[in-house]
Length: 271
Length: 97
Image 1: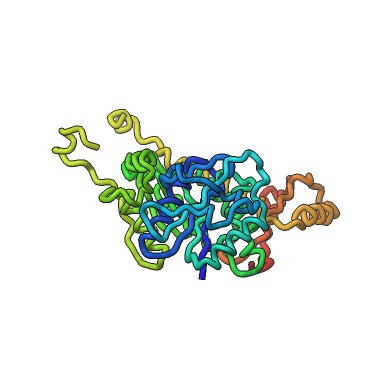
Image 2 (image 1 turned 90 degrees about the vertical axis):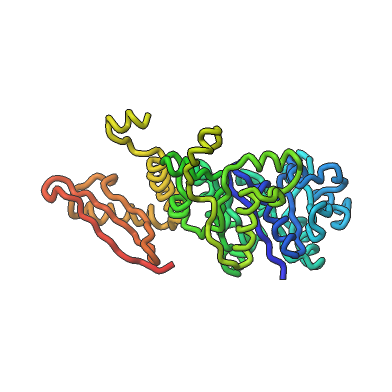
């Protein structure tokens, strides 16, 4: 049984691609055969975050247009044997993603016994974003604790239930998960940032995790390594928690409480 | 800053302001999204009926759809001018989702 998960947000720059890369890698690290597809046609970036940009020969649109087979389009991840990346194309043709084409690729992935298909949605509510959520069973709604991001997430939640095939076919609603990223416990503590409880209360969907704001994310993207592989960082730990919760494990929220730096740390200028 | 706020009393924290603003705007946007098509027609009919008995401004009738737990609630708010100076509010539970 294949599960299709869309990583979406409405707003840009909140961490969809970072999350797609980390989440798909986390699933693969648990041994699941996983594919991650970049739906951001024209602005492909998942390949860079996954560190496979130099191995892109064929892309998603080539496969849809039957200019390449799916096997030619899929790039095997360098860290995980059971993870494959399908990069977006750099074409400027907005209508390159057809519903029939996307459906065919997803059916082929199912036939190849992929257990999870992660769809990295572009920002906005145009064709790419609609195609990314069209076949989803579950959704990770990536949100920053900031007003415009929360509002856009609410908007995308409405679109999700109205436009997904699953909901339209009467197979039940898309299962929604709230993922808060770029969270700063200190600023929450100071009353300068919405808390995860605030955001959850406003959006009214279950929280699957909180990813703290961290310098490690930039380091990960600099190197083309999904954040989940940066051992010992709180971001990697938080993403692993998200994957575990997604797979049904109960885990306490971590990295959400502010710990005052000790005197020693303050003297040394630590944060 | 902290010394100043100690002296002059605390202003509301910006996160609280953000939460309040979001709750208001999202409540409005959600009703717009899920409002059934009959609401404008219902409002028009209500205006006609009430005009037979009281002279009111058609804009003094507000019909809105709200959610309360598992119910959709049609909230009808009619402001009757002058003699009964307070707003008359009718609530009716119409259907489960």
